[in-house]
Length: 157
Image (cartoon, rainbow, N blue to C red):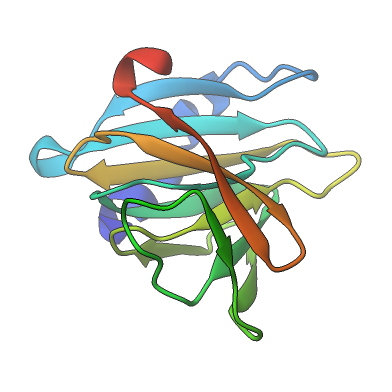
């Protein structure tokens, strides 16, 4: 999937076709390889996803233009049956993802993605397999991670 997002991000015509909105993220659904789900996403300055995971899907994403920041947890969390967790020290990881840089991730990867620029949009390509069965959204206060909401595909498609 990382190869797919890399090739797709190199398609300057596709990247330029994404309408950019100064107020909120924009997206186009793409055909991913081998039955995967893929998205082209535009990020206005100062926007982000909030903490979330992609449940049982594995994925990859790459910054096609601009720069994104990914904050993630290195700890594996329980998959179900909890509402609040206190995280151990040293579980935080920060990655800067400038144009052309991306990463893949496994199941239950908890992260947030941000465009921290105050002036420039960022654009990224994302792919998930199997197609997203759900997204779990979290809030975080210091070391406390709280499950806030579970979204299903009908909530974002």
